[in-house]
View (cartoon, rainbow, N blue to C red):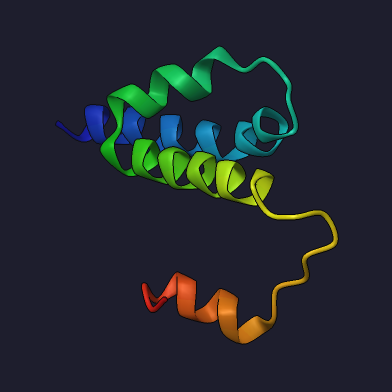
Length: 77
């Protein structure tokens, strides 16, 4: 059991260390495979991908105020 937990933590750590490169467009197969295996990392990846899609839909030059970002993070629209 302890070995399994260690492997899980190591995989999540690897996920975190590769995530930025993946989001910048590098091919990182581990990110998608671990995202399917780990519910926490998968949820984070899904959230980040939906943020990317939403950001792509913003008009160019749109500046978000900190209050809007904080409200969106808290689930307040």
